[in-house]
Image 1 (cartoon, helix red, strand yellow):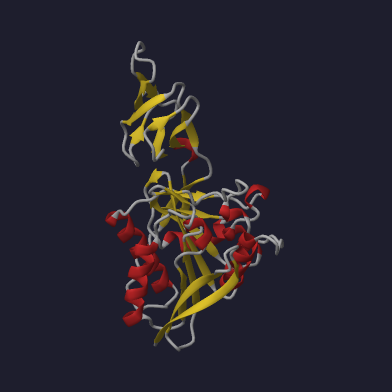
Image 2 (tube, helix red, strand yellow; image 1 turned 180 degrees about the horizontal axis):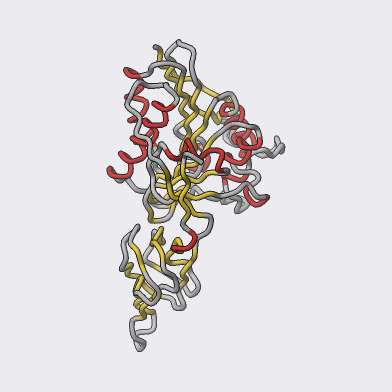
Length: 314
């Protein structure tokens, strides 16, 4: 076994500083699957603790094949900071999502160069994982096709999102890999800009289970007979500006008319407003901030009738 670091050169900043991707490899030096894992396409999406735990575990437990890690897939996104906040989802120069550059060929754009370098690394793998974080939520998988169902199943995460590769997602990392016949999925590892041990452990254990499934490590595999997924989310928006108090925890079941949150409105003459559910379903995620404007998205719900169960024996 060997563990090592490589530098993938991408371009040069306006200051003359080189922009590099740092790649880490755990190689068993035995024939087997190559697994690619990246995080940090969006600055502020904290997935490094998961990657570090996996890297340390594999140093003494890899069985066959190799695992490639790129912990900070877009260093430019992590440099977009103001005060103590990282604004790393969108390129502040043009408003574009950093996960919409994949497959584009504009070599004059450093973000295209970064995306193409990442894609070239991932296309060499047998399977790829893209780690992200989302709104206030528990970990879940985003996957492009039910052909990946057996991989999704071994992660043991609840209520996974089947997001088919439409034109609006064409230049995302996962869809470009899908189109290049590299099986992959996205794991939303919990809430944005958060260090949550429970979620870290949940995702870490899920990926370990997947590595065991591929025989990359020798470990007992937990295989469920089925998993739940959905294809659509219902969004609840605020009708007023103010400060939000979320009343229902992530994962809780709600029925039509049940209070989801309350809004202390900006106009002190008005009463606090209760926001109720229009759906029977599961509270899936809500805004990271408690500050809202009129029409802001507050809560997202998986409607009960949209929850599907996939049997692995299909």
